[in-house]
Picture 1 (cartoon, rainbow, N blue to C red):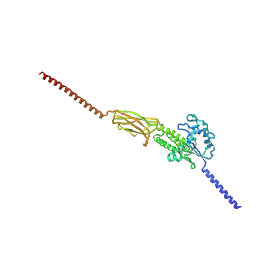
Picture 2: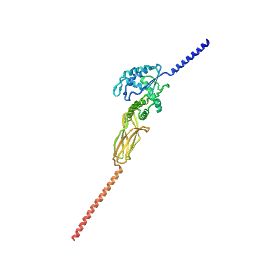
Picture 3: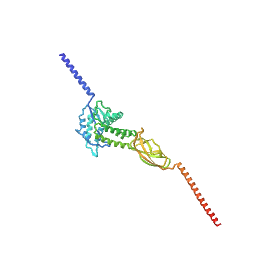
Picture 4: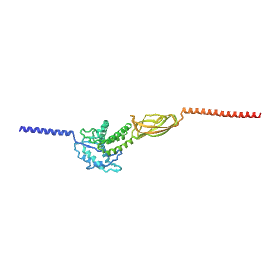
Length: 386
């Protein structure tokens, strides 16, 4: 009897230890609820379709995911998704110009989400849910910065505390990014970084943040192409906000101050370097001049030009960043040089004097020749009379 009781006690102790370890493991690794989606809204604020509205509606995919979430779950949320739903909740437009039909559904979903989260722990995914491995390879420092910004954006959107770090147990997507997505993002990222070196305008940082959606592995090839074209158009427009205006100039003296106009259409100051290059040696012109532009302004930069010879010359005007990287497209400045310098003046005066002198000598010779001919005729007549 005592042996049976001892065996039973040992089995009971093992059972309770196993249960305790299971509970402990469950406590350290709570279930993770990931709320993420591809982009549905363009930079201009219009929605590409209304599939997000369907997803947050009652019985929709996102609605069911939040409704069925466990109470002790750990939330991992993409701030882009929440900002799009908040944008829907106060009225939205679906391309080309249709009124969105899921305003009330968006409001109900946000209320459900806040209730379901309660006091639970929330982490922010990088904005746009880019592939973490690919984004880290491009720039580990940029990814860390994006992570911090994403946490702040999500905390502001939901008005709750949010952690910038990601849970260790978070499983990453197994889908492979397309080469087009990687190449498109690489080109955009380089241009946006270049623009970011000349101005701190918030529009630039916003587009840079949204461009991370290109690296979302859930995008189809068609969606990658669409987003890449849309972002390229936006980035080209941003780059053209700082430029040199073309112009036509006439130089009538050897040294002149030439006003060259640079425009800054950003709502923040910009700093660039003006580079000028003449296509021939008719003009020597200043170059590599650092220029600081106020927000939403244009500035005339005075450049010294030294005329060498008369004629026409084209000067290429381009901008660079303070790091020496070429910025934007160049402009053409057309110069017509029509000047009489001191040397030319003396040459012309000397030529005039010589011409006058030569003319005088020639007139004198003609007069003397006529006089001699006249005298010869008179002498001939006298001889004949004799």
